[in-house]
Image (cartoon, rainbow, N blue to C red; front, side):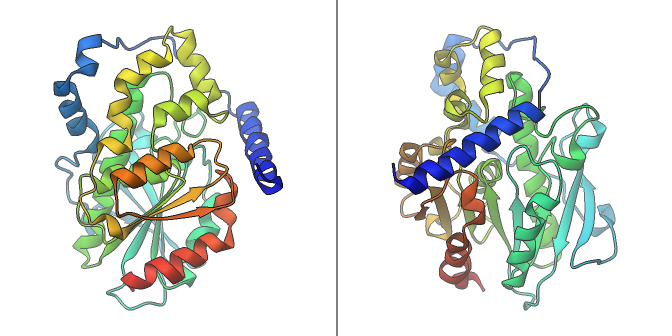
Length: 332
C-alpha cells in the first residue's frame, strides 16, 4: 500500500473510531430465526427480489402533499409523508432540500442520497451547492432514521442498520419507496430525474434503479455491494457485528440472507452505460473485489477509481470533475 493509501486508511479508521465512541446504539435483544431451507431456496431468492427491489405501488406525491418553505439561502425545504408507515412518527416524514440551478427546465434534477450516520444537513449541504453550481438542480433527501427522521433518543441510522434484521429489511424497503415517491413527484412536475448516492445512499439508489426505469442516470459513489460482508469486516459497523454475535449469529448464518442484499443479484432497469461507479482504492468498507464483481455483473457500466478511502473520496476534486465534465455532460 502506498503512503497515500496508508494516510487515507488511517483517516477512515480514526473517524470510524470516533463515531463508535459518539454513537452507542442500544443493544438488540431479540433475534430473527434464519431457517435453512427458506433462505437458500430459489423460491426465497425470488421472494427476496419482490421484498427488496420491487418498487411496488407507491402513491403519487403531488404538490398538495408537499409542505414547502420559501426559497432562502439558495435552497427550499419541503417534506412529504413516507409511503411506508413505521412505528416512529418522526421517521415517517421525509424532509428534503431543493437547490435550484441556473439551468434550462429540461435539465434533470439530481436526487442526492447521503450516507450512513449523517446527523445533520450541513455534512452534505456543500456538495448539493456544488452540484447546483455546476448546472444541475438537486434534491438532497433524508434516508430513514437519519437527521430529522431520528426517533427521540436514538443515533443516526440506529434503527436502519442493526442486529434487528427484520427492521433492517423494512428500513431498506422504506428508503426505496421514499426515492420512488420523489421520482413520482419530480416527474409530476414535468422534470427528468437522475440519482446520486454515497455509500448507504448509493445502495439505496442502486436498488431503486433495479425496480424503476425512469432515472436518466445514476452516480454510485463507494457503493456497498455486499452489505452483510461490510457489516462483518468494517470497523465502522463493528458495533452492529458485535450485537449480531451476541445474539448467536455467525457469518454463515447471515450469508443465508446475503442474496437479499447483494447488488450483484439484481439487474438495473436502465441501460448500465448510464451508470457511473466511483470506487475508492483504499476503501475500508467496500472491497475492490466486490466492486469488480458488480462491474462485471453490470457491464458495460462506467467505472472510475480514485486514490482515496471510503470517506476522503467525498472531498476529492477529481471525483466531481469526472462526474460533471466527463459523465453528466451527456445528460445536459
